[in-house]
Amino acid sequence: SSITNYTWYIQKCCFIADTLILMSDNRYVPIQDIKEGNEVLSYDIDKNCFYPTIVKKLIIKENIHTIAVIKFENGKELTMNEYHPILTDRGWHSLTHYNNYDELVIGDNCKTTLGWSKIISIDKYNSEEGVKMYNLDVINKDENVDIELNDNFIANNIIVHNGYC
Picture 1: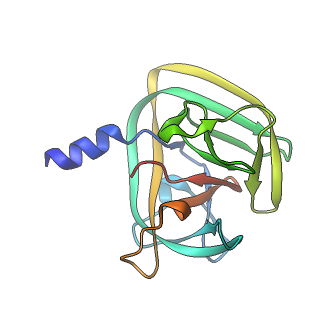
Picture 2: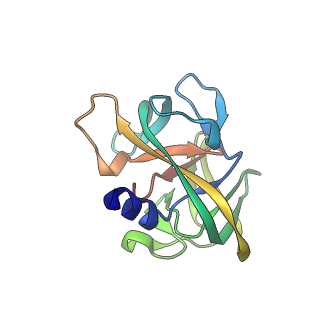
Picture 3: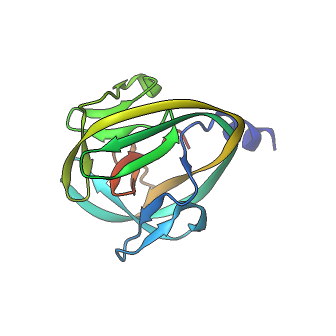
């Protein structure tokens, strides 16, 4: 349907294959292997705790050209498109002010599963051929509740927003 295609088209936030997603049973699964109905861990910002959410949909986006590689002082790294929001100690930040978030910059202190870690480098590049990338749309287990604040999951141990799903 045209609505589905539209959603597909505007979906901008995503990660490369093999980005590790933290499941509710503490396993790590490559993002491309996540299935609808799987339980992943999300982070409750208000309560400062992790809790299981359900994957509503695995989103696949072909031909992403604007790529960012973000490195953290704890040794972790995220390769994503440049829109994707990350949780910092001052709220959600994005390299492109996506969703009117503040800009994500070197030195931002980002929330991880083990506390906080500063961004030590941000490298942006254009992929001429385009890269296949993935995102998750997550919902709370008590269904009918889609809390925007907690629309997130854990990618390579970093708390990331699920973007515009």
